[in-house]
Image 1 (cartoon, rainbow, N blue to C red):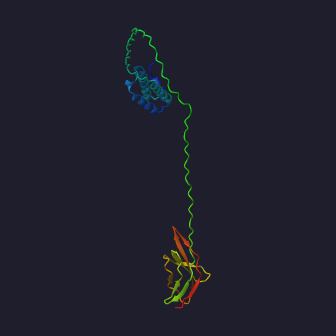
Image 2 (image 1 turned 135 degrees about the vertical axis):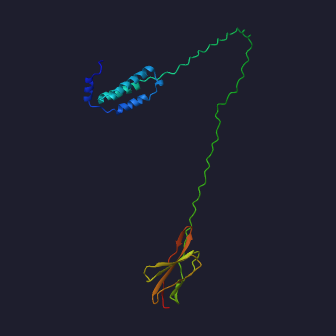
Image 3 (image 1 turned 90 degrees about the horizontal axis):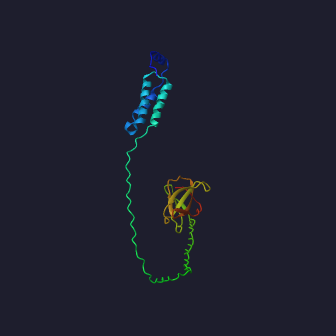
Length: 244
């Protein structure tokens, strides 16, 4: 190989310098590898590749030369061979000589005892008792009792002083309470104006009514069954004209 001349330096300057970032990172990766873990021969190849790459770094090298130097380092890293652990000498076990059989005199002929006969096992299968499943009696469905509430009867209304109307009616058996409805016309829209929560109360006073005006009332009873209210039919409609 001829020495590097001034002409070579001039030609090198004409070549566009490549990006050295990848090669510098590869050199850093190679320098981080510990020499003591690998064979001297394989590590020397890596060391030479790093030295050659370092020369490319200092030169105005083309990109192709920089890529080749990086590839040479990677090849050297892949070809590194780890040192083998020192072998442990295998111990050959000593063979123990087999014991020699001493001559044993043959036993004298003795009358052989007849083997005792085992009782013959019965081949008949034992009958397994069948277990009849217990049949649970089906529960008869409980009859749901229908709650009925009678219609309110005997409804009366009268005008008392101070623009009041007192509505009264007859007590409904087993009723939990009553609802009072009022309308301005007999066939008009009735509106609930009171809920009485005791079945024993059979009177309601409607206050603040207008003088010379007619009002219509009707009542219905209800009974609380569980979480529900069961209503009876509406009573007949009664009329009152406020005069006082």
